Image 1 (cartoon, rainbow, N blue to C red):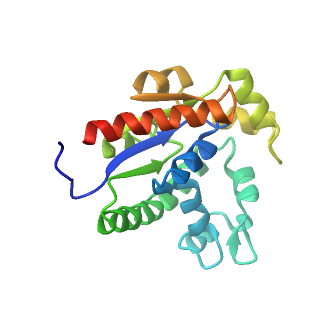
Image 2: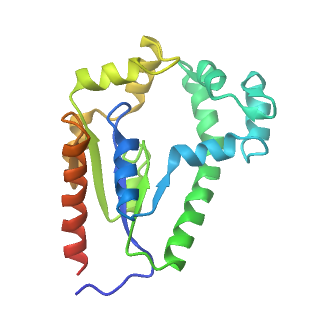
Length: 205
C-alpha cells in the first residue's frame, strides 16, 4: 500500500496537434479524474478582463478586440515569427502557471488521489518533470493531418508552424509511460483510458 501523498498522483497528458488529446481528457473526466486543461487556462487569461490582455495589448495591439485577445488574430501575428512567439510565451506562461497552481491546491485540498495535467507542450516545456507519469495521445500522421486541416481557419502554413514547434510523435511515444492510440474510434480509446487508470490505481494501492 502506497502512503497517500500531500498532493495527487499527477499524470501528464499530452499529444501533438490533432491527435485527439482533448477528447481523451474528457474520458478521464467522465471517470471522475479532475483535469487541468492548459488550453482552457490560456482562454481564461485571454478573455475579457483576463490577466494577459493588458500585456498582449502592449506587445501586439492588433490582437485585442472588444477587450479580449482575438486568438485568430494573435495566431496570424506570431505564425512564422519566432521572436514574436517567444514574446508571447514570456507573457502567457507565468500566468497559466498560476492557474495550474490553483488547480493543484484545490485538488490537494479535496484529497483526490489522481489528477490529470493536460498540457499540449508537456515535453517541449520540460513539464514532464512536474508529473508522476506521462501519457501520449497518438494517431498516424495521415489521420492527424486530416483532423487538423479540417479545423476552421487552419492552413497548410499554420499546420507546418504548429508541427515545427512540437517534438515528433515517435519521440513523444518513446518518452511516454503510456500511449493511447485514437485512430480506431472512441470506444477503443476509452478502453485504453480505463486500462491505464486501472494500472495506476493498482500501483497506488
